[in-house]
Image 1 (spheres, rainbow, N blue to C red):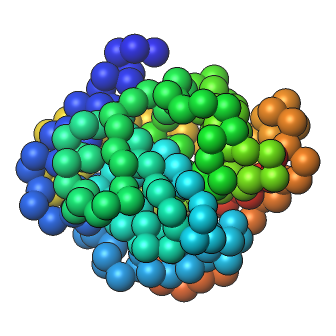
Image 2 (cartoon, rainbow, N blue to C red):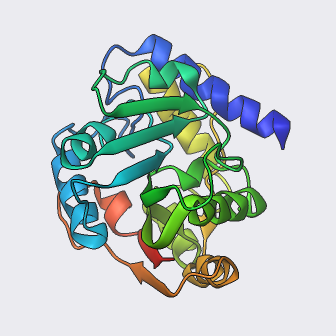
Length: 241
């Protein structure tokens, strides 16, 4: 596990150093081209509609990356904390007086119980080493969220659709890692590619029950701005503690 986490950290550290563009530092699509930064306006609006950011909120974003979502949350809440396994990628986030950044392991969040009003983790969980680690991270997100608070996890690869996703990518089952490596080479990313983590909605629902969440929803994104392979084969979850 430690080796896998170190590989992931080096991947994002390397990307942060190689790319001046904050979108290129964290994104690639099936064609090897980055998404437009403006898509984060839509992503923020969707998450806000689900969790309801408020001016008095203290918010945590797990896996904040280069801050494209974090900087949109910040003007609408009291404080926002951004964490990431990569210290280098966090350096790409422009400073704002109510943004606080920390490099840390998502499975060992260094925040007190119930200290956050909302917890957000978007387009991150597919990078996690395995299901056991993803479960630990989800339980941690619930732990640091206050009773009545909300936890949003977005862009989770749907395990039910894995075969169809791999077919859509034009690769045979088991070779998505090679395809991702080719995309990364096209972008000049030297670090090894990760294995995509696929999850079933019912698995995360079980984690939510284990953590004592009162409500849980698995959701599809009805938007049209994200790349097709984001919209068609992934899902989001919303839990209330």
